[in-house]
Every structure is written in C-alpha cells, then in structure tokens.
Length: 246
Image (cartoon, rainbow, N blue to C red):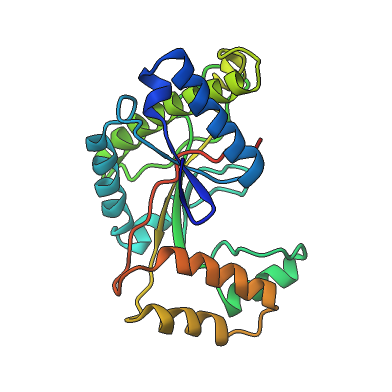
C-alpha cells in the first residue's frame, strides 16, 4: 500500500471490481487506515465518480467562489445549526479554545484564510431530514445547483461503498451500514484557500510569526498551510468528499 508521509493511499478499484480476496484485502487496508492513522487518500473510484464529473465540479466551485462577495454573502449560514450555505473568510477559526471571547479574539488577530460552501441533501423524505434548506445562487449562477447536487449524490454512492468495505473488514457483512446511512445526513463542503504570497517560506513565516498565538495554535495553522501552498498564486483546493471517524 502506497503512502504520502504516514497517510495511506488506498486503491479502491479492486474493492469495486475485483475478486472476493481482492475486496477483502482493500477492506482491511481501509479499516487499518481508519483505526491506526485516522486519515487516508482514496484513488481509482472512477466507476462511481468519473474524473470528468470531478473536473466539472472543480470548475463550477471555482466559478462560485469567484462571484462577488456581496452575492455570496446572501447565501451565508442562517445559524451554526443549519450547516448549509456560505461561510466567508474569517468567520471560522481552527482552535482548541472553548470560550467565545477567546475564539472571537483569535478570529480578529489571525483569521482562517478560507471560504466554504456547505451543501446537504436537497430534498426532504421525512422528519429525520434537516429543516434547513440549501442556499443557491439562483440568479448569478443557476447551474451550480444541478452540478453540486449531482456530485453530492455520487459522493453518497462512494460513501456507501466505503461503509460496506469497513463493514466487511469488521466481519459484520457488507450491507450492515446500508440502512444506517441511507438518510444521507451528511454534508458536502467545498473549500477555497486564498493565499497571495510569492514564496512558501515567506507565507508560512508571515502567518506564524506575526501572531502571538500559543505554540500549539501556530503549529495548527502552519501545518495546514504547508499542506495547501504549493505555488505562488491563490490555489483552489476542493473537495474533501467525506470524513470518516471509526
């Protein structure tokens, strides 16, 4: 199994199209990545999400984040519980702090340099569904709704296969989790990081050394930036399909 640093890179194709033995091997790799590392990279799932659809979603997401700020602000979260809509740069902050006053101080002194758009299931089937609706740029970018919803549904299919692989590795039977995730109570979160420094080292130093944050806070920010910045101009980074916690 390949790795990037300590993060496993799992080829998912043998699970989707391989023999019984190949499926079991991939399922075990996935289970070990979730239980021993906590992160993983998945590749070769084109039979569920074609590369052309991923590229289409990348392109549409870039187009969305390039809309004027005043247009995007119309789509902002109604409240934290909604978990649907646009989050502008600086509204969120990665921190281990728990006090509202401390978090607000951190937001002002060193805000997160990201924007996000969060999308959930776009229809209701019962009381178990969120009472909050997705927020779409109907006038400025009407195509975004269809593209995002199509991608959400394909991601759910991939999510289902991942859960089946984990169930297989746990000896529960592949369909054990099917009825536990069929409500699609998960979100698709699209990200953009807007960074405008000319050199990676200068960027990291600027964001870390110009603050008075505790060392653990500086480390969180620096490590995240190290992973994102690979060239001089702003880079669009999206989407993380689903986060698994086992």
